[in-house]
Image (cartoon, rainbow, N blue to C red):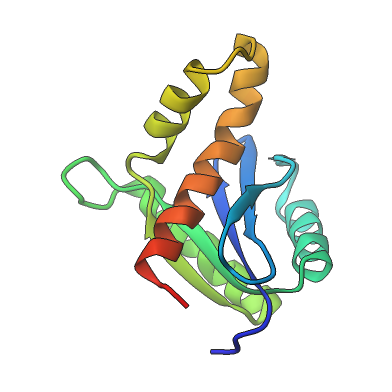
Length: 141
């Protein structure tokens, strides 16, 4: 696995994709602008620009599991999405358990002074940051 380049994390929903990326040294995770989903082609174009702009070497996609840890229909959708990313961009794509990220993101954002509307937009980004931080802790460089 090449040591240069960043890792990009995605919290993929039906309407939006939360995005986070590591710093160049792979130490911290920062949120990027949330992507409003349009269609597969446009979503891949937008992701392609981010991958190029941030010199991404790997992608982490949040895998929604049931509380029991079992997979459901959403998990299968993410597996397909990850395969599409891998074949389209030729990068390694990791699936990462995201069971608690949205809950934790909501909890963290409730503690801020953001309005409910702004908090809603920030949840996807925060969930992507939490997915990336969790993945980074499990895969130290």
